[in-house]
Length: 266
Image (tube, rainbow, N blue to C red):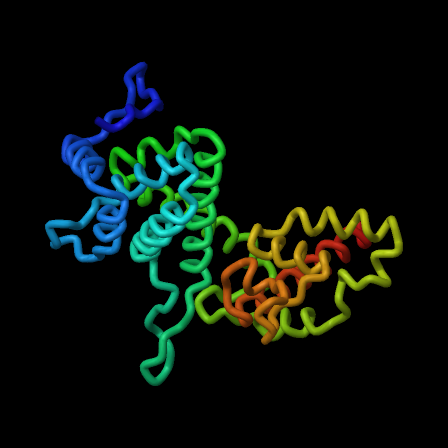
């Protein structure tokens, strides 16, 4: 029998659905090798298909036996399932039948994946009760996380509107492109000035998360992209395309300059 969940709702412990409990019990009766084989089944109509709730249960169980290889294998499988439940960044609307890239959908996907993986890391280090509901109804829990990501993306879009960013085309308008081409506001020569540095860091803190992360990595000396596989890059850290990283950098530069100019005029 599966270990009971710990999270309480109205004083009552969360309980897995009977279907999930039975599936977990069946998995516990077979060898780890057989579990791995079943985890690889991707077709939900296959009798051997393992529900996502059970995959998560297996992952959480790895913290007690230090099965890094088994953990990694199941994690990759579950991550693929998470990605299939996220909005497609490619949307219709481009000319000649081409697709556009939705920055909103990219932001939602990054939010969901980052939060979910953070919960797994926290749970592996101890126990994260937030994952208990994912063992009760994985799809419903993920849908809630996706909705949170959408709300956050919409808030950040509103913050970006003031600098003329077009979310659907991933392009800045002419006015902002001109500003983005101006001098780098985070250049090392300017950072030598403690007053400027203090104002700059305050402006960086006000940026949307996805822009701020790019600037923080640039300040650490991380380059945007590289053909060398062993060199750390922003593209690899954030899991985005080079174009997306550069667009975020340019939007951040424009917003920082605007914030600094506003402060000077005050």
